[in-house]
Length: 125
Length: 125
Image 1 (tube, rainbow over the protein chains, first blue to last red):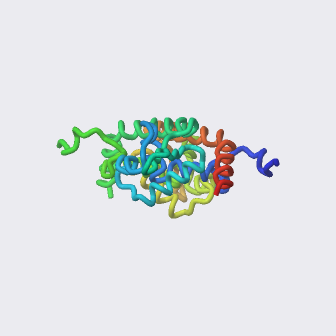
Image 2 (cartoon, chains in turn orange, brown; image 1 turned 120 degrees about the vertical axis):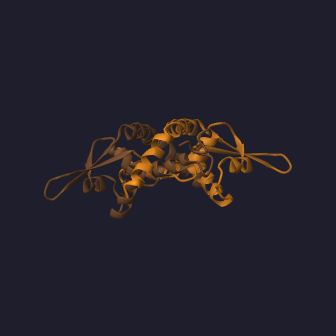
Image 3 (cartoon, each protein chain N blue to C red; image 1 turned 90 degrees about the vertical axis):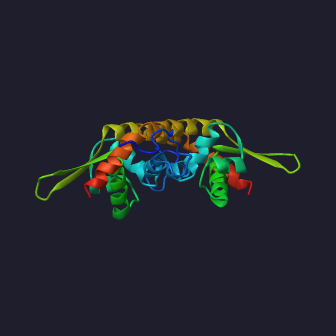
């Protein structure tokens, strides 16, 4: 069935566009870090939680669920005893995570410039 | 003066790293949209607020202040009556915004794939 808004061009600037919801998941406080971590390889839940320093169990579970629902993260349950649950990126998740890693590397590489800007700003106030 | 942590490699995965703070500003709910809007050109406050559909005056002001402090956004007051305040990107802000626009274009282009994933996920629950 055709959706009523199939002809509209998606835009994150429109508050009701589905693309804004997805952007919010991807750039959310923990979404970005979870995707960037999974860009390095698959993780079990607790290992991912250690990697994303500071995230609570509840917030990480919610974040992974949203990203799985968006089709970016794959959750695989292996039939071991106890069951082993692994999280990895889908192909689209990999493409999204690559963009985020590019952004993160830019910010990490320019952090001294940005700290200097912060200090200069604070000195004037 | 040398900072005590000048030798550490910045990492957004460490909760106290300055790069995580900057990442939070850039990928915050309104930070991403403000930077992506300013990537198109300079804006006065109210025009920017109309462009970033749904943002409150208070949240946009806070967002722009954080991004100015990080050295990504320039705020220029022109000596007209009444004074005209324009926001634009610094060179570094332009580089950061380019990464965000790449991410946004990927998500907007794949929104139908992602909506289908969301529907499939919801159908199973």
